[in-house]
Length: 555
Image (tube, rainbow, N blue to C red; front, top):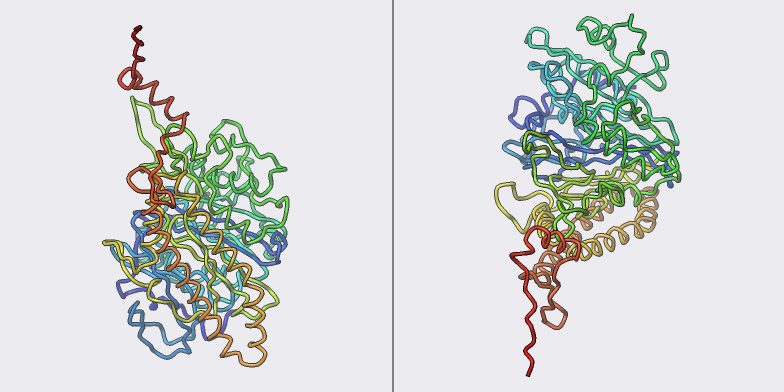
């Protein structure tokens, strides 16, 4: 049940103070999310992933402290809360022209992330109060469980109005994982600004699901409140607006009614879902045909059972997918250049000679602001069980480090700088520097990046049992000291990664210099180009580059 002291919303925390930022004008082709239930994970944890993919965004880590209802002022965020109790929330600011806080996980191991599916333009409300960032944060400040979070989000939308694009929310606690999909009703009247429709489904235990900027809940049970909740107007609004005809004989499908997938949604969004699924359950042999827009092919299942239970390392690896080993491998082909660069410049689509084309859109992408894997673990005290593996920038070239929900502050490197200028004291900028230097000579530089990435992540994971045993011992004897211990460990992890990545930046610019690879002895051996790429060059410019053989003169 919701705490009775929290019946009123806490919207003043984030509204009316100028900190809101608009994703809706910038967040096209953004974000990928994988959701893992406790029965599908190797250690019994519930996990969700998130990548804040939007060009131009810059991340700061921060913690919104819990409040007992008294008024306080946070000098960094200038947030003035309502005089009501709130839970502590770990999250981040995504800085652009303006800034706003987006929660990730609260002190009760409740985590919420999202992907934007937009939906028909005419359904976006132009009046109302709540964008998805605010909805996530005020829900984390009020709810303790995933099911309760669905109820809080529905209530806040009803009371204050929803002014954003269509959203798929991933919601996770130590026992349950839910997906909630929300879209507006096209409200334009300030006197009637509460319009939205929504549906929420629990992921069956032992299974996983994913979403990537395309609504995925289709048919849903109408009389199973344990596993499915929905707004009272979900079908009536569709009938009133001519989006659904109950006499058609077709079952009601949220996706087909409110966000039907066109060819671009299939290729750029459903293809990422296919890539998650193909790697998690290769035994299903799921075809890419639906993602390629082949007529008559069936959509992918909403959820699937993995071939083997997933570890957190497995999940981290999945966030780095670029269609590796498939015909769509971003590291292959002429478009990858001589060094197998997996990055494609935007725009995602372009026209040439009257025909439209589109690059592949992988799970790991260069315009990521930050990436994360959350773990909520039953049977453990919340400060120990709640864990966010956080990384800056592109998941492919990033490094995940552990943040326990006991954290109460972050070091300067995680909360400094901005998008307008390079700052070597900022972790975000250091990771961006390494990533961008890597893209230019990917197959030469990336192995050095991956080596450090794996070294640090393995160290953190190997230390977990030791760190958590000490924390659990302290929980029995001195809970306050346990909080300090886990806060200090999380901060040490942030600083360690910053220092190591800063050194990596200087190492790679020294080693990979002036189109050579410096040897340990200071020499510069010539590396040349891959043969396949040279053949492409010769095909295009062979006559220009060809050096004729000289005839030997006879004596």
